[in-house]
Image (cartoon, rainbow, N blue to C red):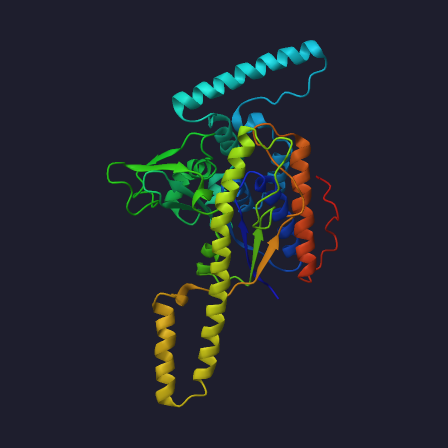
Length: 377
């Protein structure tokens, strides 16, 4: 049986490489079993998975992650351990100089790094014509407008978003105070916000995870009814373990605090989805009951069902969803995007592959031919 499947990728830097490999493995497994991914929902660090996964370039996406360096994201070259004491002294002096420059920039401009290198990487990697073609898998990514605190949704099913999707992707990954906020003018014309700030012609974007790192409710309310929704998140909707070696440095502190905030929001979303599923099941039971009732009682029950669909519950656009988690919560895999190594990336990708493979197997899908350990990892 061909399944209608959505993939929801949670935000967070570590979910970038994790979701890339997990999505690649999920899609290969689905195709092997006669199905495919029908929609992608992503935010923050998982946005590249949507941008390249929607056009079937998930293998290329994984290769980009494998070859990625901190310089590609923040524009600062990662320095390997010193070879000798003299080399170490030079590197220490260089690091002090860089830290001074970053601190000065944060004080003067409000952000530590430029978006230039990351924007160039996205521009080189993304084929906008393919992304916005009818053949592409539909995707949604989100950011937050700083001025109105409203969520801004970007989709490749809205033609106007082709003009601003790169800025939207940067905005979705705009973790404060690391990066500057992309500004997109003409928010109403581009169908980004119906009511932008009265005194500002456009949106000023920050990380989408600040309003929720899990677009699961979007998938539930989607007009397409999904038989199966994969939720991809390294930590399994739990706050990751603290790295006691580097817990007090600035990147880890910011990432940790953001994780605590988004985990709280996403836990509420998960409970909401559980409630929606229960409401949908009750509605279906009432519809079955109505068939056995006399006309007068059936009409009264129909009024109840109508109230459930059109009232506060708004069940008319909600569907029961079978949710499968792709996660490795027991693995303490931290990811500092300002100074990571290729080993850090490969560990996260390996975890994504193994978690996806395990879930496919538990669903009873044929995983023969898929490697037990992905060669790229």
